Image (cartoon, rainbow over all chains, first blue to last red; front, side, top):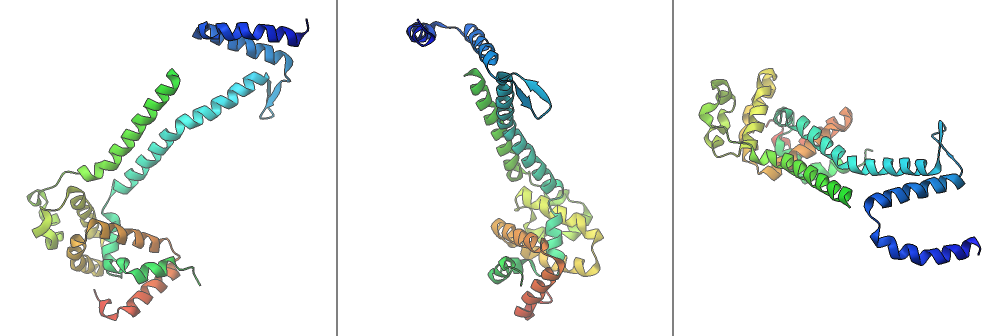
Length: 122
Length: 130
């Protein structure tokens, strides 16, 4: 019996017991699989600095992407709060500037003025 | 599965906090006119009759503007006093639009800002002293 035939015979057994495998056993099997794959895969050089097993490199890359996605909402929140803080530090400062500069405030509601503002500079 | 759920809950909590931060402006409590200092009442005098009917966030913006008053040049103080009443009677949307356009103007190079101001004043000569 060659390797392919052995795998074909083994497959129904593995499929049958798949549903009975607990979380701990699944973790162990996953680790065993990674070790087995590491034995046949070429090691990977990370950032040109260190050489690690292929599965470790895969885990690190996955972890970086996953963590980035997790921190994305946090970064968005911090940016929002920072923006709010700067905006509300003295909410009247911009109004004071608007009220005291050369043009009356309603000039900035003038559609002509808004159109000029959008025009590319000549 | 458990980690995905935890991540979803975490994202939902962050979203709620962000929404709460956005809603904070609308929940600003009102400041009664009688609680203003005599100096604030003098500066904000033109809007005194309407003050107690204004929403809290608008009062805070006007108080913020009033804080700048002592450091203004005489011509700026004059403009502030003449314009504040009309300003406070604009709708929130109009004020927001005016701020955005004003900030858009300020992002332009100084010579372009000057050119646009001059252009508007030439088009509205009757408004040049307001």
